[in-house]
Length: 247
Image 1 (spheres, one colour):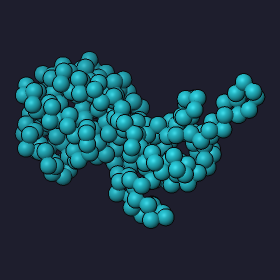
Image 2 (cartoon, helix red, strand yellow; image 1 turned 120 degrees about the horizontal axis):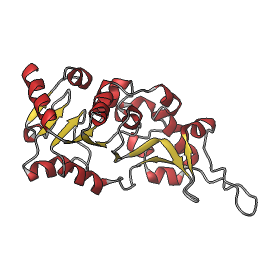
Image 3 (cartoon, helix red, strand yellow; image 1 turned 90 degrees about the vertical axis):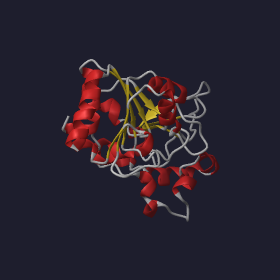
Image 4 (cartoon, helix red, strand yellow; image 1 turned 60 degrees about the vertical axis):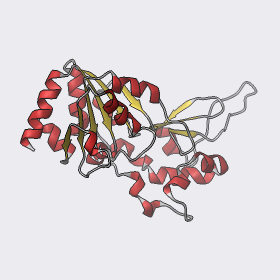
């Protein structure tokens, strides 16, 4: 791995604009599980896709919320902190690099570490909003109520009382900031994938677009092989924190 790290270091040193594409492998080092693998959490014979879907939320929001909060461990959000991977990316920005982060993660740890330009393609777990009046609520409100509802008082002195929708992109929703993420990737000097299997569409098309441009060095750091490894200029199958700490 030593030679690979030296190569990566030289590319980072030369690059002024770096785009990171991050997946679950970045957050697992903070103790956050890969939610898709948590089959034991689901009840009523529902799969992950069944529960975390817009149709299920719209059909039965009272049943949706307890399962959603259990899957995503809402009560534990305050315990999750940025790890060495998040901190490395944030430090590059603090030292003057133009850093953009495209993330599949919903935990907000890139912002907590200090990155300013983060495209949360799948939204964020830290907030929910009222579908009716669009008022935003934080995790404390979600935790304080089994089924969180809007507390805004209307002109007729009645509470809105609409059940909130999480700011996570559910199955059936449109993903966020996709065009902006593509432009950031294509305008970078270096494109680095961290901890993603690149199996989720349509965002796994972003590395393909970068490769098609043909002028941007591409790196992937992921413990397991991916279907797209062949299109990267540098492939490192090591823990993210340990790899970035060695730079």
